[in-house]
Structure formats: structure tokens, C-alpha cells
Length: 298
Image (cartoon, rainbow, N blue to C red):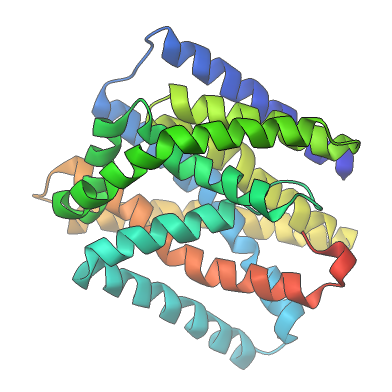
């Protein structure tokens, strides 16, 4: 499995390089087309990795009966619904918490034995660095998700953090590159590619490339590698089911948002949906990590 993770990391670095060069050359889709493409990719390639949470649920709680799965589904849906409620009633705290939790979650992507500081820089790069060159556009996108007032409060903070975060991230890359371990150098390369992508490309494009080419496939590969061969094949089939669910949810969202501007409806459907799924997803991963022997934790 190590060679597959290595290959996946290199594919991400290659896509990040191509996207960075295209962005610097001025290639850009119209805003609505960019949003539609990003929403489709995030939904069809990014969200399915969350379907593997059932694997963690079964292993952690020993679920074997229909009643057990019903209780697990109730737990999952209940937490997700609570997140949507916070978004609806408290958009600014929602946005701050979503960005912070996302950064912590993305910090789990680097290889095992990566330091906590490097993980924090890596995860934060996804959120903070787009504000360096694309501050107004980032504020606009955040405003579509949580409203202009919330975005006007959060975006300037990200812009203030962007330059020192980039400097610290580059120092982290150098530190990792000097590591005697092969995976330390791989992490340095992936981190540098992520930083370049996040700075050069527009916020929506950089996030889409990262989420679909790095975060989601890495999670799937790691989960499948921890399972016996028969269970691994079942898990991969399970990850395909969200594709059908996504089409149903997008159709329902399109019906509910009829008469509203299209861009806010799509942004809210995708990113509030991601936020709602992230909380139970992170809790399961953290519980699973703590259940492992200390030497196997990542």
C-alpha cells in the first residue's frame, strides 16, 4: 500500500503543478462554470470517502444488527443536523468553527510520524494561503456560504495570517526535506505543492484539486489498506453509493432553491453539506486513531 500512497501523492503534486501553471498563465473559467465544475467534482470524487465511515463504525462499536446500524445512523444524522442548525442560526461561529475544524482534519493527510507543528501548517495552508493573492474572491465565496457579514469578519483575519503562514509553511517544507526518512521528504514535496497550489490558483479551484486529488483518495487508500481483502472490496463498493445519493441531494437542493440565485444555493449545498459531514467523520477518525497502538497512530 505504501507504493500506492506514494503514487497518489505524486499524482497530486503533478496536478497541483499543472493547475498552478495554468492559473499563473491566466487560464480561468467563468465564475458560474467554475462553481458548477467544482461542485460536481467535490460531490462525486470528494464526498464518497465519507461513506467509509461505516467501516470505522462497525470496527469501533461492533455493529452487527439492524438496530445497531439504526443507532449509528441516528448518531451520524443527529450530529450533521446540529451543524446545519448552527449554520442557520449562528453563521459567523459556524464559519469560524468550520474553517478551524477543517484545518485540523486536513492535517491528518501527511505520513505517520509527521510532527504536530508540520501537520498544523499543512492543514492550515488549505484554508489560509488562498487569502494571500485572492482575498476578495475568498471573501466572496465565504459570503456565499455564511453571508457577507460573516465573511467580512473572517476574510481579513485570513489575509493577515497568509504571509506569515506561507513563510512558516516553507520553513516546514525545508525541515521535512532534511529528514532522513523517505516519507519525510515525500511530505515536504506534497506540502510544497499544496502551498504553491493554494497561493496561485483561485480558492475554489485550489480546494477542489486538493480535496479530490489528495484528501479523499488518501483517506480511501489508508482505510482500505487496514482491511482484509474481502472487506476492502466491499468498502470500495460502499464508497460508490454516495454518487447516487449526491445526485438525489443535488436534485432536491435544486428544487428547494428554485427562485433563489444559483451561486449561493450551490455553495451552501456543497460546503454546508461538507461541514455537516465533517463533525461525525472527524469524531470517528479520532476514536479510531485512539483505539490503535501508539506506534500505529498517524
